Every structure is written in C-alpha cells, then in structure tokens.
Amino acid sequence: MSRRVVYTCGGSPADVLTVIEEPEPAAPQTGQVLVRVTAFPIHPGDLQAVEAYQGSGGQPVPAGVEATGVAEAVGPGTPVPPGVEPGARVTVFPHPGAWSQWIMTASRAVVAVPPGVSDEVAAQMLVNPITAVMLRREAEAHASIGYDGVLLQTAAGSSVGRLLTAVSLAHNISLVNVVRSERGAAELRNRFPDVPVVTTDHAGWADEVRGAADGRPLGVALDPIGGKLAESLVDLLTPGGTLICYGQMAAEPISLPASTLLHKSPTLRGMTVATGCRTPPSTGKHPMSPPRS
Image (cartoon, rainbow, N blue to C red; front, side, top):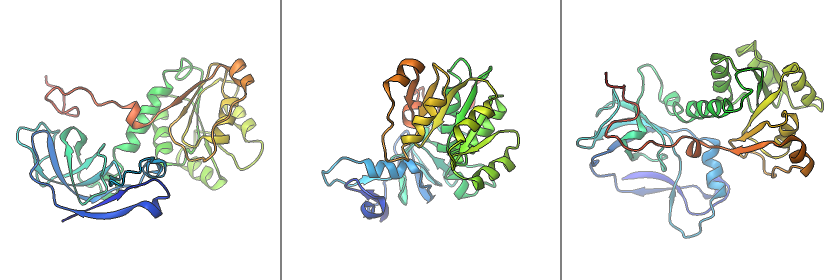
C-alpha cells in the first residue's frame, strides 16, 4: 500500500490534512515516470491552497506539488532528460499530489538530481528557482528595470527572496530588499553586502526605501504578503509602476484609494508558477533536453 496526504475541505492544514492508504501504482505508461518519494517540501502556497479550498464534495484532494525521490520505472518510449532512468534520483514539479509515498508523474515534470545534492535540497530545487526566474522576467518587462529603475522586494529573507537577490545581481538589476526585522536585515547584509536592506519594524521605513533608491524611480515591487504592506508599496512606486503579488500571507485585502489610481496609474499583477510558467506543447522531446546540433 501507498500512503498519501489529502484533504476533503478547506481550513487550517493542521485540522483538515489527513493520511490515507491506497494501492501502489501500476507500471507507468508512455509519457509517465513512477517515482518513489523520499522527501517533499511544504511551501506556503501548499498550505494556502488547503486553507482556500472551497469544495465540499467529500472526495479526497491530494496535497503538495513538488517532491524528490527515486525513479523506479519509465514508461515505454518515453522521452526523458539526461540522467533520468530507473534507479536514478529525481525531483518532480509540478505534480498535484506530490505528498505521497509513490507518484505517477508526467515525464516532462521530472529532472535528475545532481550528485552531492541532498534530498532535502533537491526537494526545493525547482519551485523556488523557477519562481525567482519568473519574477525577474516579469519585472524586466517594466521599461525602467535594467536601466535607471530600482526593483523593490518584500520578504527578501525567504528562499525566493534570496534567490531573486542573487539573480538580480547577476543581471545588473538595482534592488532594494525589505524584511520585517533587524535580525533578518543583518543576515541579508552579510550575504549580499552591496544590496540595501530596509526593515519594516518602524514607522520611517518607507522613507528609508526612498533614500536607498537615491532618487531613481521605483519601477516594480515584488510582494508575497499583500494587505497593508502592498498598499504601502504602491505608494512607493513611481507613476506607472507595477506591483506584482505572488503570495497572500496577509489575511486582509489590498485596499487602494481612488486618488492613488488616478495619480499613479499603477499596474497590479498577480502571479504564481502555475500562471507564469506554462508548459509548452508536446514536441516528442523533453523540454529540458539539450538542443540537437
């Protein structure tokens, strides 16, 4: 038997998540890989999906979208990326229902785990980096980013935030990081000494952000929190700036006065890896395979 984490109604994950037993999967078909899971991460988005679930039909909904394990079998004639074969360590994303002992997943969602990478690290190898790349590309759609504009990000001490900081430095994007505490700010300054960090634990933090921008336009703000903080970010943006929300950690809604919309004309975007990264049509070749010469 195989165990799987599921829920049948929305609510606090601690209250509604449960474990069921089901038969082990059969042999994979063409286009599928059977994976024995050894580790999976718990992303904030996973828990938010459980809390926000509106269904009430009583049918179990499998939880999780990312996992790492061992490829036990590959479907006949299935194109796979280099290194994916029976017995190889692999990581999987996206796969709804990844919190399970066994998963039967599409081959296009599987990549090999490099030697020396632990299961714990490999289990986070796809969602967070893909999110960081997605956000960077979306930010660069604003004309100011990469030129004289400054990118502003909240929750900068998170895994995605640290990855995005490294990506921004690699692409010469000017950045101001925002965190909640001085302890978090100190950790970021130690890791990225050339990137200014501002904490929101005092009333004057918005002016500190403006000072860190040094007169350059704050063209884009990236925020996984929402609520009152997102409202403050819109106030910081230059006219025509863009707020990109990629999470909903705050319980309260984002409320903007009409005057802000009239005088700033901001663009408000919501993005997740599900909406920002589309799977390309099948070409008979795994999307992560190297190009043919």
